[in-house]
Structures are given as C-alpha cells and as structure tokens.
Image (cartoon, rainbow, N blue to C red; front, top):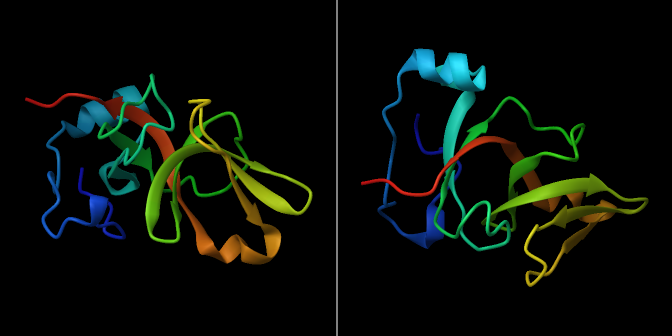
Length: 130
C-alpha cells in the first residue's frame, strides 16, 4: 500500500514511510479492498484519539470520497493539512468532527467546500510499526 500521492505528511520532504507491504489477500479478505483502492495516510494530530493516536497510520479506501457515510472516519485534506475526522453535511457548511473533545471542530462554509478534499474512508489503523 503506497503513501497517498497527494500528501506530503507533516511537511517533511522525506516521509517516515513511503509504503507498507501487505498481502493482497489480507487487503481483500479483511478490508474488502483491492491494492489500487488502498492508500496510507498519517494521523497528523490527536483529533481521533484515543482510537487513532497522533502519527498513527491509517489505511484508507480511496474510492470512498463522498459524505454518504457520516458515521465513518474519513481522511480529509483541508488547506494542505491532513485530518482524520467524521464528516457531516450541515445546512450551509460541512462539519469535520474529531472524536477527541479537546480538539476543535472544523466548520467549512459551503462556499468554501472546494478547500476540502475527501481522500477516502478509513478502513484500518496501524498505530505501531517495528
């Protein structure tokens, strides 16, 4: 699984991981993903803690880029920053809601919706790699 090509995590010119080797069968059997649908992103903050720690590695389904499933966690890109959040459609805005109540909620006005990109739905989280 490769690092999402749209990202440069943490602003580092050399990301800590470029890819992770996983058996294709594991991706298919456990996550119902093919290799071309999966990407890696990094949790750049603790917005989804404790379930997803800061610097945790998320495997996302990059084919799921709509807001149809608001109960799921998505990787989103807001003004160049990657965030893992639950997203909801409000009447005139989009809500990017963290699970950690110490982290502020992002409200994106509908007229600025183009400043947010849904990268995909989080399917698995790997918090430690040795």
